[in-house]
Length: 256
Image 1: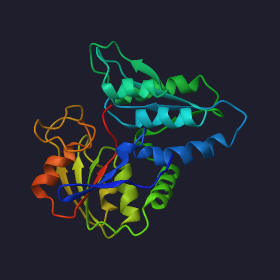
Image 2: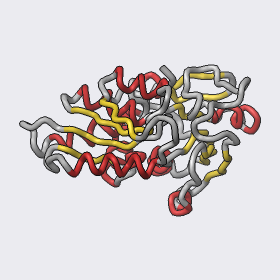
Image 3: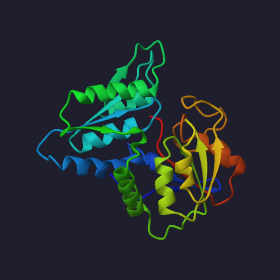
Image 4: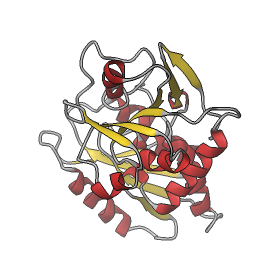
């Protein structure tokens, strides 16, 4: 669940390719996080519940990791007339998908979260566990940091400049703890990032993707490596125009 980082060059950039993992980067922290929870009642069947945007990659990680550990990952999403490829991919990996709404109108994430909470209220709190949006809890952040530190190849230099997208900004928060001297070039792809989170990043430059969270990156700006067109891929256009030789790019996952 936590193999060494794969780093490959794409032109003048070094790309950290966590798209090689079924569940992407958050798989690295989710596995020990779930293991720790399961260990509290090792003889019971555990279920992890998450409310996800339809284009979020955590729904994929939830299913992949839970299945590997013998647990069940349940993800609530807004019902659409046609499911996203990521939701179908998550289901194919073992995620149980619970759709909220009628499929004709958009259901905001807070309503999806309410549906997940109501479902959880009918279950045993010892064996059923809510996972917060973005997996942004102190426990998960600590696990992800420890896992990434373990996965850094021996002899890897500290990136001077690193490009990545930020949705919940959980991964950004972790990488800034690992590499406090790095200058982070952050592409905001969803809601405005919390000022408190960004205040904890010593060196960063923020860019805002011009398209909505669920829209793919601009045509012609797709990266030359597998990525999520509605997420990580939005870094490439900015990096190609504003990056410097030797910059790193963190790629969380890929489209199925």
